[in-house]
Length: 473
Ligand code: ADP
Image (cartoon, rainbow, N blue to C red):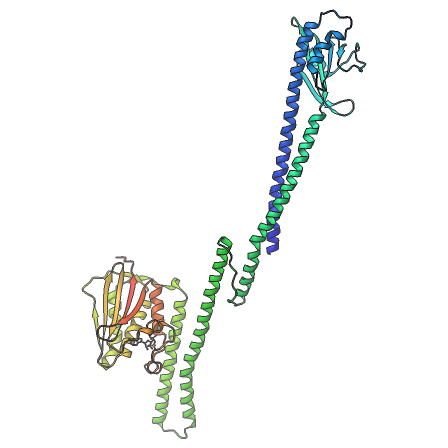
């Protein structure tokens, strides 16, 4: 993939550069040849007109030799050039020719440009000469008292112009080839620099898709590609952590399920191995069995609740909730558990009228219930649990305080981990699954809130939930 991308990049560079260079060369050569021809033609017209004016004056002068009459005027002007000058009268007869060897003198010599000049025009023509070389020819009329009495015809081969154009073209081609070579090398290097990290990215992405999150990109520099590499590395870290969490969760969950299953197996085995058990004994076994099944159900229910929470914030069913009503309902539900152990439940709303706020009722109910249930579970008989609801700027604060054993400082973060229990056997005896606070924390975080634990003044612990609200009424 990378090599085809590299090829595409180089091919694109080449196509763009070549097109630009070819167009540029064609334009420069065109412009140059047009300018050179134009300036040469203008120069020849200027010379022809000067000759025409001077020849017109010398027209009537007597001379022994017809040719000598014009020689001075014409040769002076054309000295140092390769221009051939011909003077003709109005009947196309050559009166003078700078080319002494020519046999035109005295003969009729007709050319289209000369005809045009005799019609009073300043005529020019560019074309191939007798021996195939390119020629520029101009002809202008010679006038006397308003009458056209003859023509001056100048012609020259444009070999020098062609040579100049040719050498310019060669230089441009060499120059373009060098540019193409240089750009080719540069684009090859650039494409290598850009695409070679991509091969590494592909390799790492392939490993990720196979479930191997240990590969990392060797990030060099600070550019966009390096940033992409860093992002990919970060993604690998996160995926690795997630995978580790997932494995731990599955193994913890299996371990948790094994305990009640072992209990059930033990009860069943004991019942089978007891010969002629009396009905009271069978009832006792079945009671134990029922307790184990209850524990199994509790674990499975909580695992399902956690899985639902893991599905993400999109599963929040927000509705307008009166927080006092919600806390009151939790307390009412907990009262039958607290009463038999003489545990008193208090509520304090600080005489504040809380408006309705947007919450997922079931999730926050479950969160507060879990904390209240723990407070009762882990506190001694005759203890108290207080539910305190207050308002802070932009948030609702719910504090649940007990005067139970409290939670050691070093354990305060860990109790929110899945399956974590402070005192494993005691927590198990109380029917704990180690999942309650994990569910609570997940629900609070989904609402953009936070949860913390600290020591209560009178001993015991305080769980403080802060929920940012978007009050609707
Ligand atoms: P469990 O189902 O075992 O109660 P939780 O996740 O709800 O699991 O709680 C985790 C652990 O935190 C509990 O096992 C218990 O040891 C400790 N804990 C929770 N609440 C309290 C509390 N109010 N007082 C003392 N310890 C607590």
